[in-house]
Length: 500
Ligand code: BES
Ligand code: MN
Ligand code: ZN
Picture (cartoon, helix red, strand yellow):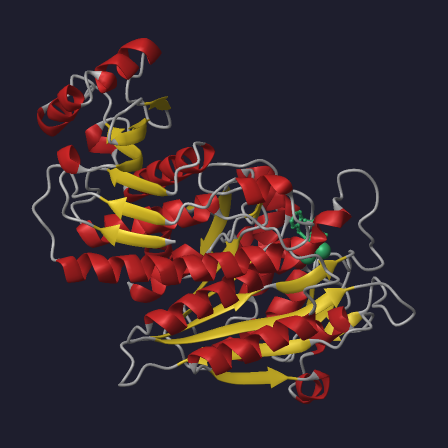
């Protein structure tokens, strides 16, 4: 798909589909809209009149224009002008793109207002909204006739932002390219998360990392089981021991050319399948068949790596995942086993299904030693977080207020939601073990918080944040710019955080 930021005024645009964003209360049609309405023989006013369109955020109406230089017209509600966010524009662009596909337009003109007074950011958000909302995963389906018949949207023209001064063409071209790089990362994350556990394994994740390193000039380190053993990663290896597939500790590094402005680490939970282990995920509600998504943190991490490696910011970034499966066999961890992590701490595994925190423990110890300025982990860590925040909001815990706030801001402009959660030290007593330094599982209540407190025990000196993304990595039904399935959640936030 090609994006063009063109200087053609609204009144002169012609083509297959034109989508116009309108604010609530703006339906009175001022200026250029009134002129376009006249040119289209009153079609815009008629559409508003007939449908009762009010410009409410999330609403949209479309019509066919017989014999006009514009074949299809859509009005998209943007809500109140003062409340328009970058994500509001991203969502509107997604609505417009889906309208174009439904109406078989191969080209789309987009007339939207500026968000947060930033032409580059608005342009990038439009590219993300269009591409991500049209994404379809056909890898595991045989060819359908429907796909052949429906033409692809090939050209998207971004008209001058209404009410904004003219922008430098270069600025907008760069913003389009930035959006496309981010999209390629989100798409990679979606592909990884949606792929089943017989396709994406610790071995294929390591292969992917090797390809990313080759394609984009990243440094690559993959620790095999023996090397992890030598480093004392008993927690990670305890989880890995029942699988027939070898564990892979993956460490990719992006290094800028000059002296980095800052150094960061991103750590993703990489369970390519979570059976629960001997505390097997059994019975209704355990959703064992969805546990291919338990590498959603790693998916976001590698997606961010792909985007960052193309964007090439002046920031050093480490991308880490301790990848394995949590399986059952004669070699499996027994509930009650005691493991020793790479910082020397001992863990009584009172529940083999709390495996993510065991793999993350060794990954955090490893990242902490890199001497970075901050590190953030993303993990599909607990069902408790889904109970607390539902399917669209991730939990955010941080030992560092500024880091937490930076991630929150990064998420806001990315259109990804994070809610601050407490690292309530009082609850740490729930992890007390009679026989070891700690148990891996606390009481049922506050389960997402004790999980975060467990991770904290493996962070020594580096400012750290933990994102529990168990809810938002997957949607059962299409939602905004996320088609049903894997969302690629986290990539856009991570990119914004690195660039901030
Ligand atoms: N991968 C799961 C968490 C999960 C649940 C992710 C639902 C996505 C959707 C994690 O490994 C797990 O099993 N957590 C347990 C922890 C419990 C044993 C303390 C849980 O949430 O039930
Ligand atoms: Mn589990
Ligand atoms: Zn898990």
